[in-house]
Amino acid sequence: MDCSVQNVLYALRCNGCQEIYIGQTGDKLRNRRTVHEQQMRDPSTRQIPLSNHLNTCCNNEPKFSIFPFYKFHSDNASARLSKERYFINIFEPKLNIK
Image (cartoon, rainbow, N blue to C red; front, side, top):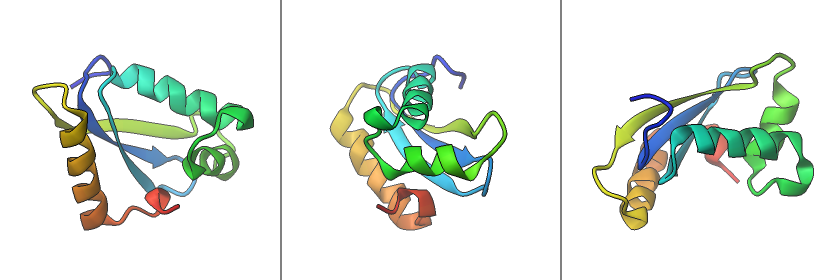
């Protein structure tokens, strides 16, 4: 999978503390990465605590790495959200805690 992949679950790793966030997107992964970068830089656009964490935790660039790890064969938001919750419950990534 590459940055043009769609309908995936992804792991985002903070390059400061090495903690993981699990997310999902129906869009291209590169577009989701861009949204994370925008929300990290501009506090007025932040929708999740992850954005503030990434902005303050790592002093170097890039502040995070993103990796797709589960591909869906169709665009089904409900299935992505369900599987995302499944992996969050199993791995309990600290950056998903609100």
